[in-house]
Length: 273
Image: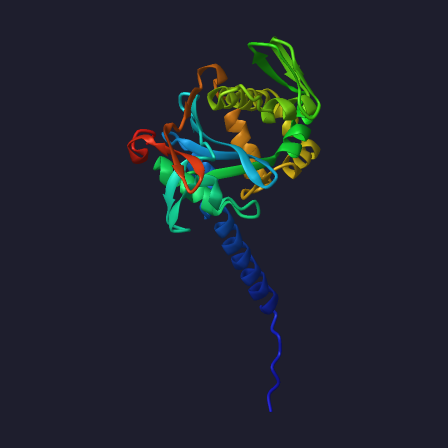
């Protein structure tokens, strides 16, 4: 009976197998689709959904559309009271009725359908985490055209002019609503603040790329992309010319449906598209 003996060539065969396996793994890693690289490729618009959430509901929702070759961007404000025929629930309702803080994919999809675009990325902040982010980046500058002085569950005090808001002040500024204040003024105030936040994040981009700071920043938001891709995306946003950002709000006609006032987009949404 002949016994199987490991010949002197066996270590070479093992080495060849290891090298082949290593090559396959590296090929898969380097040649797999890179969503960030594809999105940042020249000639493509990067569309990102931002949601500021309070009590598990969207307080404000924005789609930032950025075109890297020209460093131009547009911001589209999506009112939560926007009325649509929503296929997933088979009725007419507010667009934020499908919002689930644990998974915003349905909300994301409805906004894509409304605007007729693909939204590549999404970020969700709670009002509390937004305040912590603003403290992390040492405040956000906003211009307040008229002084605000009112008492409602605490004093609301904002002097007119240019203000640097810390986290606590920013939370109040972003969320308060006065009795005589129209929805247009509320939305305009929040839009200005959000643009100030994007601009400040761009100014603090190098600081936010610090490994320890990046971990703190990431812990204050919810997103489906990795930290590496997130950093690359905000690197791109740092080039936005904030002073030239076009701001649009989805407008429409008010109608009462089931006891609630809904905004139905002009021309069934074709105008905003």
